[in-house]
Image (cartoon, rainbow, N blue to C red; front, side, top):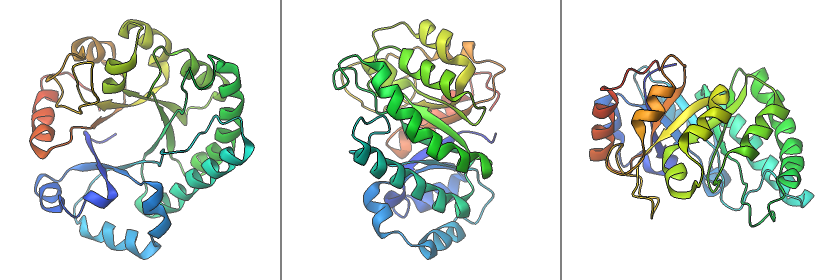
Length: 254
């Protein structure tokens, strides 16, 4: 895969277009449901023409109010509809990876991973064949998980090289009650992408890597030689540059 990607919402790209083009950044572009409602194919074509350099693109799908593991079949149906619409955009942008949230919250599901998993398998078995057909990998991101079992079980059940994990360092740092080593023990074979940002374990601050308390040394050491996509999720241009510079000190294979 290409060098690090920078996460940015589609609606913010115009604001930072000069910065993006100046540094010729690879991008992970987030499309919210609201954006999908108004977006036309011609908008995406014009947008792609503005990025007049050779860049690598990934996509982050919508997540607000969506639930891939929903018990309610109608909620699942809306989620599937939203997720499928991303692949219309993908026909034009040709991303290598599309990231979706897991949607698992242990309190909401009363610790019933099996119930969440049942609904999730229905959702992802609708989506995955399209991704495989187009040569796009799906990466499921940890959000509120405090341990990795639900994600490992989903990976095992799906059993596809096109279906893996997007490990988010900031979310781990904020929500996990399980050591990083255990997450890596269970999920390392499935990690396709990393979301790299930092915090001090009290807010999802999206700081530059190394400006919080996450153990990047352990993470990067464990992944030496493994080909993954590195995506920076710092929220300011200054922290993007800081993160890019700090990545250079690690022996990364992306």
